[in-house]
Image (cartoon, rainbow, N blue to C red; front, side, top):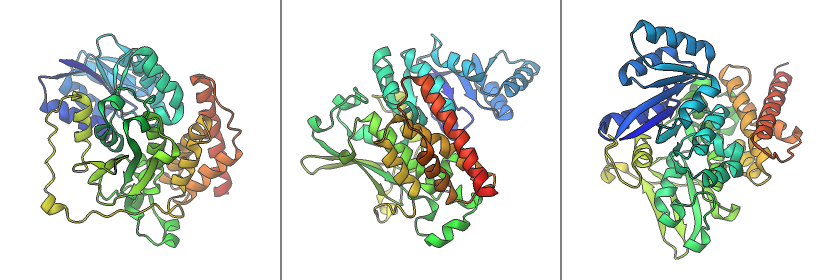
Length: 398
């Protein structure tokens, strides 16, 4: 029985992970759960799963959870802060860590799991967007097992030969006959909206994704296609892909989750319903297959598949991410940090939808982008970009 730590337990990925575990109780034990500040939801999870540890990134939330669990007679030990999340990631009793904390906050505890040699199920794309080469180097230095959970990267992984699957970040696609990775995306809710109307998009409209059930930040990123841009950066690191080996294509039906094109003209596609339980189950059980609770596709009901190239006038954030990917680590870290600040400002009604890209572009233009030498310097780049993004937002709202 594998013992699992779930970072981001109250989010959509955490919820889906627990759903898969519930369908396979003989194979997995929930050892620890972590969240940011959702005390009520974490209390319910602890009472149901009785993990040995719970960790809250927010110290006040940790104190509230500790008291609530004590009043309920639950013996789960509560830890707090990034240190607490890291402790449950590297704990000697843990086999597998689901890294599903949204945003830059997930980098340190995910890296802790890597350095402890765990099986890391990577749903936090920012770990690779921010730390790319450092992260890949650590995976191989410490003998961790890295399995992608994002539906697109999981799909690519499934379509690649075992020789590449076992060598994340250091594989040679061309030597295995791979000519191109085709990263699919739905295009979000505004793929057919008149460009002039995008200025008026509200937060409620932006988070209403047509296919997937996700949190507000990721939903906005999907609407701007920044999410696909971050996934592009992640794919570049996971599969050691050059610019010529990596393309983005819009597939509105979200049935084909990504594809791999081979030298002989073959294209392998991984398909399924838009349900994160499928890639989660695959990563949990790899190389086996387990019950995920997802209905198989009925191709008689699927209808037509359509594809289109992304329009960078509609999706400027995607273009920013692709370009930043080949400028260097400082650029992708800066872009990710600026985007987190800009999306939050949009959700709070401070800036407009298309101003997210404007903030991101302005920060990239103003940043020095000197290459970081370690994780500490990466975090300094991240902090600087956030300050610059806040400053640009203030300029836009004056």
